Amino acid sequence: MNNKRRFERVPCNEKVMVHYMDHFMEGKLRNLSVNGALVQLENDMPMQPGVQCLITIHLNIFESTLHFLAEVRHSHGNAAGVKFLFMDSDTKIYLDSLLAFRTANQHLISEEYDYSSRYNNSSWEGILYPR
Image 1 (spheres, one colour):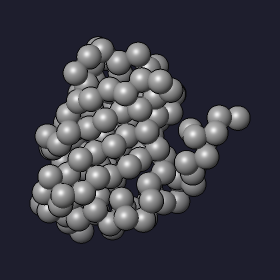
Image 2 (cartoon, rainbow, N blue to C red; image 1 turned 135 degrees about the vertical axis):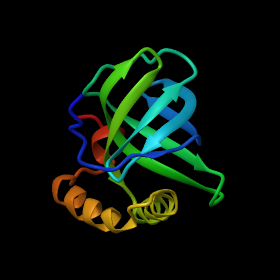
Image 3 (cartoon, helix red, strand yellow; image 1 turned 30 degrees about the vertical axis):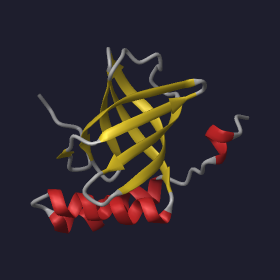
Image 4 (spheres, rainbow, N blue to C red; image 1 turned 90 degrees about the vertical axis):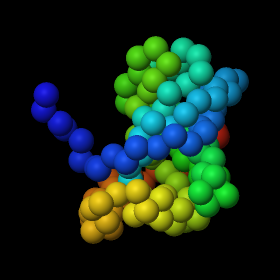
C-alpha cells in the first residue's frame, strides 16, 4: 500500500472528546502527528468527511488538555482521521513536546511544523460562528 502521509504518526492512547454541533463524543486517541490524528470513539460517528469539529485531548503525561479545530478527512464506523486546522500556542507547545517524547525522529518535528504552518491559516471563528 502506498503511504501518502506527509507527517510522521506516533501511537497514543489518551482520552479524547470530539464536539460537533450538539454532539459530544468520547473516545481514545490512536495516533497523532503535527497535522492530525486518528480517533476511535466509543460509538459510531455521525460526521461525514469535510465537516469541522473541536477535538480535546487529555494528556495525563503533562496533566494538560489540548484543543484543536479540526476537519474530518475520513471516517469508518467509530474511527475517524482528522486534520488539524487551528491550535493555540500552548497546544502547539504541548503537542511538540509530546511528539518529540514519543518519536525516534525528533528532527522531523520542526520540519513538519514549518510545512504545516504554511498551509494552515484557519481560526476558531469558522466552527464557533458558522458563516
